[in-house]
Length: 286
Image (cartoon, rainbow, N blue to C red; front, side, top):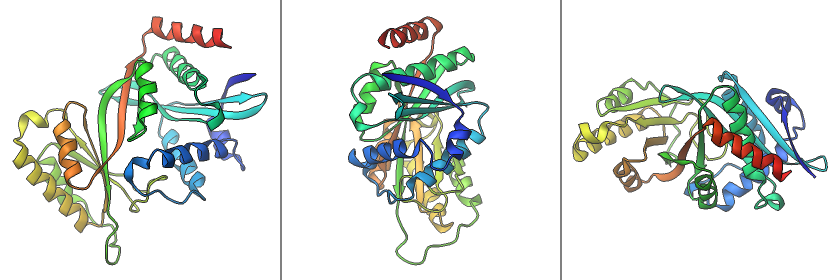
């Protein structure tokens, strides 16, 4: 019989070995099987330690983090890790990871894990859920669409390893100024990605929702390309660019510049009545 129980995420991540490790490896394998958004991935060996560090960094900066583990006759078969963040000025619950062992997929367990995350968030007064789905994972995207999630933004990714010596990371002042001129916010993660092969720090670009109205596209792309050159000069050879779902022209231009569709962000309003229905269906299913 399958049970879903809440656990302390910090304790689960601190354990060695961690109960989450084989479940994460199942998700890593699934990402690779679906094409990993067209980008090269890091070696499977050691990927858990990288993901574990990512989890600790993420939940360490969040007011609240939740971990739900599903077991079948006591054996772990899946988990959902979520954390509280803000989006558009409001509190949201971000489902960071949803992983199931291959043999448990397709039996409704994924929907149950999503439901318990939503219910717990709604009980804390959060009225919006957020999920990032890897590009190319169309099955997962259809699953979240059926659960009521709608596209919010897309992230495009490019990671071009330098042909010569890898440059040391430099100052981002010039690149920041270039992108600011066209309404794009530049930040750097300060660490490599845990799934894809990336630079030591990833440059992340956030396109504001108003750029399509404020700039003609040729001038906008001229500024974008100038920013990319400044990033390369500063040693940042991995770039992620997020744009609103409505600004599809940004994604088209990114693809022309060698970017891959990395993620689609979907969101859903968590109304009390709707969450109550989903929780009832989950309990009834048990």
